[in-house]
Image (tube, rainbow, N blue to C red):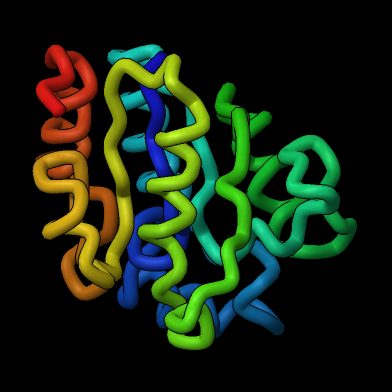
Length: 171
């Protein structure tokens, strides 16, 4: 199985998109994701057959760590419905791990490491995130850092993800 560990902010949106859309929305949680960036994600999935594992802090909006059970009227509902409309689905969620770093949001690398250690059927993976938090050092080429100031999941980063996912895993 191939997996995409997905953060949301800075990956499926960017600062320009957010500023433009804040003028038209009452709250940022009512669908602050760029369909253009979601279609870049879809292209990765279509070209690799990878499954999406949500590693974003948004996973707290799901019940019982289940991607099919989300709280109504939350960002999770918008995400799931948008994904469904575009032919995507969240396969799974990383489990929240409380660490000394979790108050700073850096529990994500530990959560991904745990997911990889438990799911031995993963043949390859990429991590799409705009925060490094030590992930480049830990995961090497599997970590693709997006930039919220430079468009999020733009074509060249999507191409890199496709290339990595379609290679034989070396580590």
